[in-house]
Image (cartoon, rainbow, N blue to C red; front, side, top):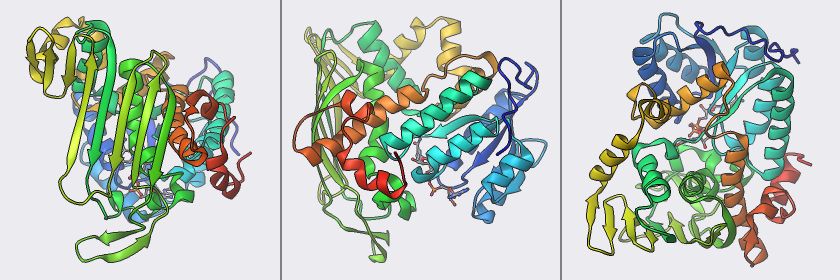
Length: 407
Ligand SMILES: NC(=O)c1ccc[n+]([C@@H]2O[C@H](COP(=O)([O-])OP(=O)(O)OC[C@H]3O[C@@H](n4cnc5c(N)ncnc54)[C@H](O)[C@@H]3O)[C@@H](O)[C@H]2O)c1
């Protein structure tokens, strides 16, 4: 393993160098990272350079490199082997956009090679894997000030930031009381076209971990931490399809496609949560926040005293409330792309030694809520999220931890 190159306070990055970063994993989500790199190449030239791409599928790594060459002077080097990338290319930073089973080992190897890490959510495929990852980061941070940022972008949209402001800072709905969050539709296709997502041992779970981790981070951002989860999960559709219309390319699946839960927040707020991809017929989608003075949803604010404000008016009020400095932090370079926001936040954390908005601990908090769904379903009782986060309750993750040899 290469010796760490960043000794504490001795970063090779000067304030004028672009941060050289390697994109590792050039599949579906990498396209959104690419869009953000493109925007930054235009709005903040010299901030960041993609110096390499890496994917076991060489065609994907090469095609992403070619796309990057359209907007930056140098075409990135192409790798198909992550260890070779770390040893030969020695990137100061990596952007890991990989299947969940690789998160904890790839992060630890990046730190061993002295690289800062931007990692796609969820933090890892189990709490035990998260612990290894966070321990590796703690050592890398203490020794070399290396940064771990988690690519969690849902809270960084204008809508999410305006909603948080309306609830927490402006107090527009009064004392928060209830969240109603319900989504039901039918999706028999491979989610994002990827088979690994439908295999528990590879993904760590189904959409409750993969997708709803965004929702739980968003809830934390708006209301503070979720303390307890009482959940049931089901797997109704046990086969998913590459082409759901013709039922072509069938793939067996052992991850959930439905979940219902009552969530209790530390501050007493209650959430009624339903998500399913196994509901044929009419699609349902609603999320609304109720407080002592009224309700808020994406259409806007509706108060007890009959005041109405549209979502767009609310966002205007929020933007008007921001100082130029705060606006630059929340929406750097005036972007509205939430992935661009997370990328700039990462670069600033590396350069300025700031803590990223979603660091490992914040990401663990959201992921522990997903794991609490599995633990609650397994135990048939409400589960304290703190017990899951600390690894005291982990029976439902046993097969995953045993498979990957996690302590
Ligand atoms: N933030 C979001 O909104 C969002 C959305 C989708 C996915 N994601 C996250 O992004 C990550 C990747 O998801 P995806 O949808 O892009 O998956 P994907 O399967 O489309 O892409 C993963 C890529 O990693 C490559 N890969 C696999 N093993 C590798 C290895 N050993 N070395 C190098 N490359 C390897 C694959 O060939 C593939 O191209 C996951 O963590 C996922 O949860 C986040």
